[in-house]
Length: 309
Image (cartoon, rainbow, N blue to C red; front, side):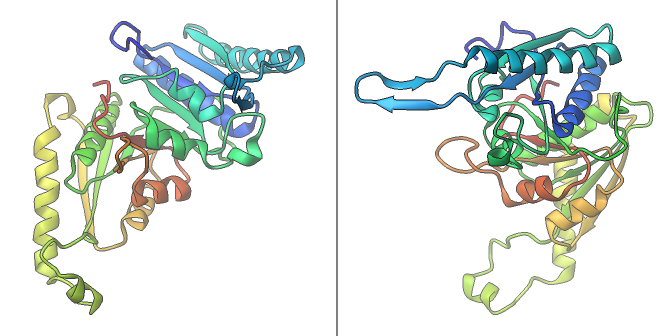
């Protein structure tokens, strides 16, 4: 994306004709309509790339049959969405790249990517379970991974009960801000803020930690309370005053705490905690653990990304 400022933000999703991708498509369409945004539907052909000393890197062009098959998938999924949301602007695009790359190249800050919990391309077995993680690690906009659940179909309800993990970092501030503004769009929106006490202790030496020493309970309690209060102070504004806000502070392992709190939620929100010289190259262990374990949609906020609010 070369000019993010000049383009209209959109909700972007990938399809492959599978039930996993259909669930994500329906969630994306409902979110696009609620936000007054266009929906862009992408199908990735995953055409292979060859490298030679003479021509460099070259991507094989698709055959007519492969292109027609891709167009049929796009047409079918777009028609499905238009029946559910007649007034929604739906755009379609056939991409040659691998699924995660196809979406990364077609999105920028201000967009929202929505994908199923499995890969969305013709080589699903090779991509199963990885597309959402790769996208969440490298995207410059929020990524929502939607699991397919039996019986779910049609127009998903707006996310009302949202669970968000905070640890005092800038990443978790972005996550909390996203959660609060998403909940604020619903009349009965609520946000559950989860902070795990299982956190590194800066003053504890490796020898102390190896010996099994842990800080006193009251210290951890005070530290957790200060972290939550600090993050809330940074993001609370008049826009989210009407959101019902509650806090869960626990010593449970962070992934377990979030999965338990989010079992009946409409959405779990986490920060990516990307690390490495290349921004967002890796996801933190908590965000990866939540993505792999959650049975409800999970939104991952990338490092320093524009949340669109």
